[in-house]
Image (tube, helix red, strand yellow):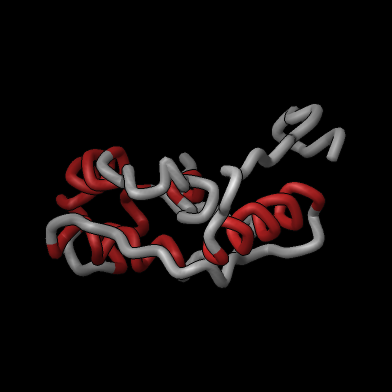
Length: 110
């Protein structure tokens, strides 16, 4: 891949000498995603966090590709507009992906 909207010029996936099936699947899906041929991933992700963090991340997964939502709007959806600041922190704790491409933490907008 040479170009993507966010400015990526080229991407290379390097796997280990004996990659597992899940590593190969992840590499394939990332390549397809950045090429623009898929919009969501089927690679299973096991996220670890508090109940609140998991709830925020799960709701982010429900936002369609290419769309964004404000922290305030998601807080209202979750039932308390005062949760917006806590969502900023929860989103920042989404470290299981340093797979953030697989988990749509970038779907928060202004």
